[in-house]
Image (cartoon, rainbow, N blue to C red; front, top):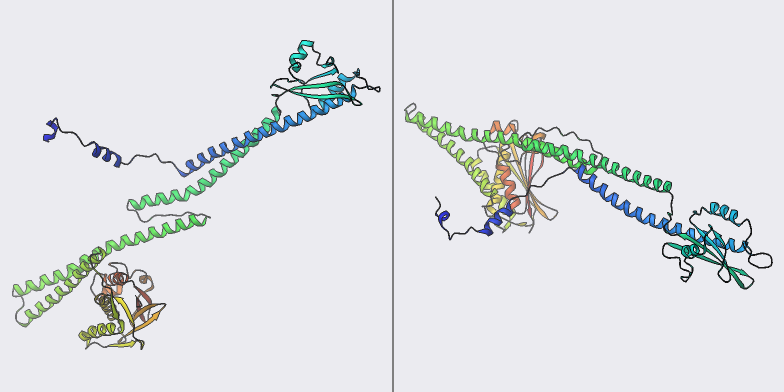
Length: 486
């Protein structure tokens, strides 16, 4: 048992506990694109239209009140003209009431309008509707500096005869009277509702169209995560970005499927390539030990076992070199190199063990000196690997011929090694730089792990260059090593 549990002086590390809690990911409820965008667009659109509607209603109301004031002023002026007789005296005609009713219907003035005609001394001579003196003072606010209070709007029109004011027309209307009818409000609300529903339906359709291919891609990604690489992603989309996403994902899924198949095949191939020499060596040594063979035949068996062990050693070395370089444990030098001299020495040393082979080597070097920066030993590994590949690809019906050329291209140096071998099939050219990949013809001809070109390309890139396949066909194959020009 932990002794700290019985120690009363022990205190837990609260900071550490809080930090461990902070590191725990918080579960966040996810939502679909369709729900996310539709809901937020709907809320934003409703808020925006509500503001627009409030501003519009306020503007309509103010405009309507201004129009009502102008109409009331026109009505007051007409009443002032009608209550003056031919002699210029104040006289209310008998038909003023029906005329006012007609004008109010014509001008669409509500019945809550109060009209008062007074003489020069302020005595009322006509009211509509009929009101007592006290009601007149309360309704029209007379006696309070002509103010009718904040709830009413007072319009005064003087009655003038010549240059003398003989009376006044007062019109008072209620300020809070609706400036628009219920039918107008219903129509306005209907238009806003149609706009909201149309916008919501539009964003719903667009969001659904956008989310459908993304959802299909997500489902396919889950299948790939579970190990099912053979996904059927048939999504038709008119949008370029979505189409590119679906095509890229489809290509990625196919590539992953091929890589998984190659991984399984490569693992089996590597196991087989390493197991074969071990089995051969074991059988040969056991034959010598058990005296199955003796004398010169036993020595021949031991020589074969030695060659098999050397072959296995080379394969293990390839694996170690590739793993070391992939993990970044191999340093690459940056020396100033005479490329013509370096390539000539590499080819000369490579040709020495193959003096008895019918190999013809041609050179196409420029006359001037060409310098580059790189690692001489790494460049030698690349060139030797390309020369070995050319020898392994020799055509059985013609002698092997290699052409090594050096030329400058776009500020870089191009070392090209071309052969007249059988070539690489079109379907295999895209995969020759993949690790552990070996073509069918090469599997039948030579043993190996399929790391030569992969490792050589890594070495070229580490020196600021590139290794690529220039061309390949029935007439031969050409690889190009590009290096920086000094």
